[in-house]
Length: 214
Image 1: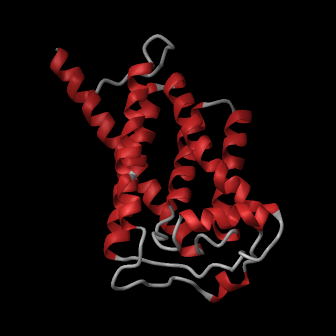
Image 2 (image 1 turned 120 degrees about the vertical axis):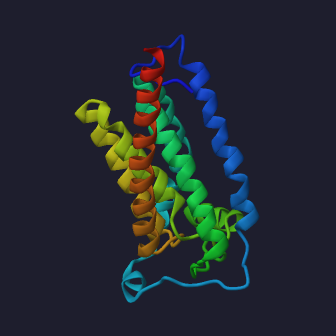
Image 3 (image 1 turned 180 degrees about the vertical axis):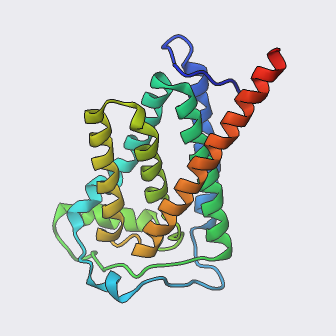
């Protein structure tokens, strides 16, 4: 795996193939997304005061295309930051799955089956396809925070838009009752740790490559 500071449209397609690692890793999500022997709750009294806002299911679902689009944009903008962010995401996912396996947490979600509005049907669709487990740390938060960290290389306006979207997604996780506040803290902590470590690893590899050329 070679790193260069700038990506070009002619050479960026091969590095983009590394994105396929993400769905391979995500196979473990469904394997772990069912109740184990012990399911813990990290819900606090503060979480109970947070309202359920069904409309925030929209940014919650926009997370899927958002993460993919930002990673592709990073690949074209700066290859090194792209790999740093992608490696951080993959390692963060692995750490999250270890947590899911060894310290499984769950959340109580509102019953929206009888609500007639379309937005509640969307929420119900999400609830039906994603069980109330695999909560700590939040993968939505982890990956959204990584996009915020990695895109500082873009202009201020673009970075602010990405930051706003990342924050909106992070907030949505508690407003649609998919996560509690502790899950947000855990997601940010794991993301920051993985981003810094991946940067250190890439710098080490680059220095080693430079020494080998001499």
